[in-house]
Length: 247
Image (cartoon, rainbow, N blue to C red):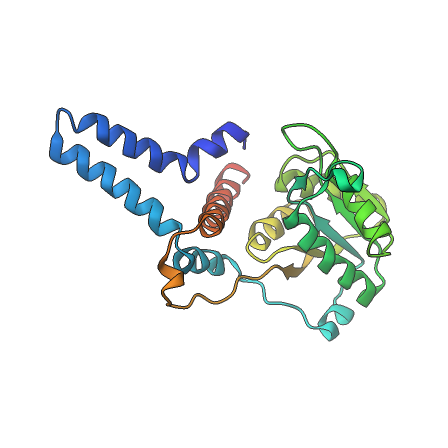
């Protein structure tokens, strides 16, 4: 999905546009316009509450965590770790992996140490340009976690291409079964993409969302909660898109 289209479709943009349109229409249709603006702001505020954002994310987390015993017994021939983001990191000598990618790398290193399987990292250049995330992922794994990386896939721009290009690399090595490492809320869409690319997948999710609890704090809107709702809505729309447009 093009970055501009993603920004236009996902919160907060559509709600802000709806609120602005409502305020403009309020000049001619006072009641209808004001109610539209209020509804848009209220919906945005709800999405920014930790209670709702956690509920939305947990609905996507359908793959359970794996125990150490399950990892060692998994019928896989390799590990694939998917990228998420990059970050400006002058203290490391240049751009590096972002916080979301680092979560996946940390667990991917644990999976590799538990299984001894060869490891592939997947992530191309971000749309805004800059580093190839797969190269930064390899540096972090090898230099900081002391885990070897067997292959890098550095052409992909989205999850579908992660799967397609990674499958091509692995199939040349005669590998068809992988332990797939990504966030729990991303796993359903990622697994579908990898299976469509011809690979057998053992889900190895990480970064689980805590259970939503009804407290005063959970009802107060916050920027992190809005970001969580953003990911939940994006994954939901992405799953629908893969189901119909990629069939």
